[in-house]
Length: 251
Image (tube, rainbow, N blue to C red; front, side, top):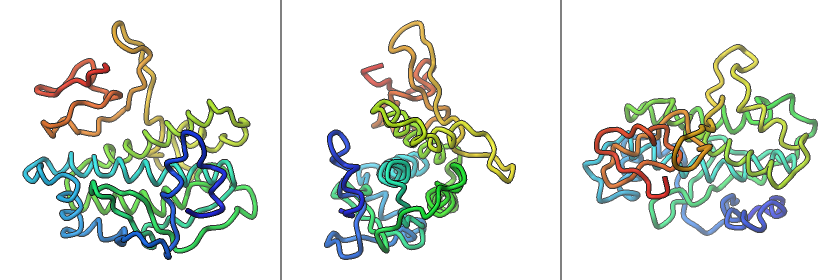
């Protein structure tokens, strides 16, 4: 792991300690840019779900991206908020370590990163490397290969970002430490006036039966298009499932 990140990964976050690595890590890796080429994407999807060779590509891409977003978001955001550490996660220089299950297991960075020399000017500067340098080209690359909605993919990213910030708020950490994380998902517009795709990715819904309030995504990840998979526990369709969709047992 990257030594500077060691203080982050203890207790329930210990299993994230080996996600971020340097070029000398012996685990095989592929350039992240390979994933958004026709052959590269198809190879990744088939390694992940060989039994779904004829499955809906939108759903497969969405499911694969969820692990990518989760594993990239947790160490990158935690390092920035807690340690003031800026990781070099630009899509063009990132390498992805693929696990035996065909999903992203970790990432090789070109170097260990550096501490912010001055406090970032708000959430969009703090997370620019992650949002503009990685999520945007990754999502646009996937959309260029498969007709999956951008909203679906940004919702996958926002779901994990909101989950992490909420978890950090419960630790608890000083409010000022996680302020930029909360501001990112509570601000509708970016400084240039454009829409913030990370705005309010989830909502907490009161229900008459079952878990309430339910932490619910604003946009579905479309996994129901794969008959083998039940709806997520935080699916927006829980109370009105699409035809043929299976409900998760816990909800």
